[in-house]
Amino acid sequence: MRELKANPTEIIRMLEETPGLEIIITRYGKPSAKLVSLKETSEEIPWSERVSLRGTWANRHELTDADFAEAKRIWEPKLDV
Image (cartoon, rainbow, N blue to C red; front, side, top):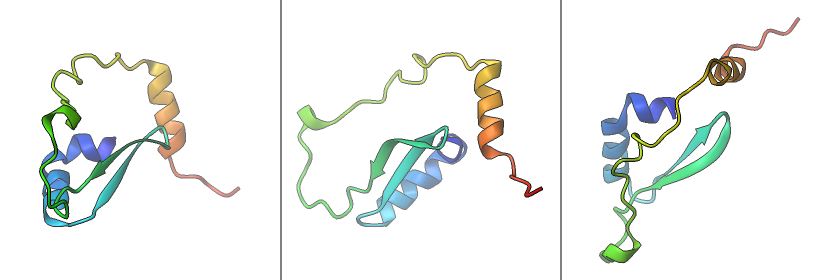
């Protein structure tokens, strides 16, 4: 999620330029979504099968201190003691 939020344009460019590329989006270290390049697809995707992301950021929940503590626990370096 962090990379997606920080570099959305770069990620879209990579998907556009790399046929067959799949990017797995993780949340708290667990897979939650997959972005797939459509470059290798030769046929148009019907509108009925497309998914709109419009308004998704507006509907997400507010992060709590517990969310940040969990993210810190997952991402901070592990020291072998």
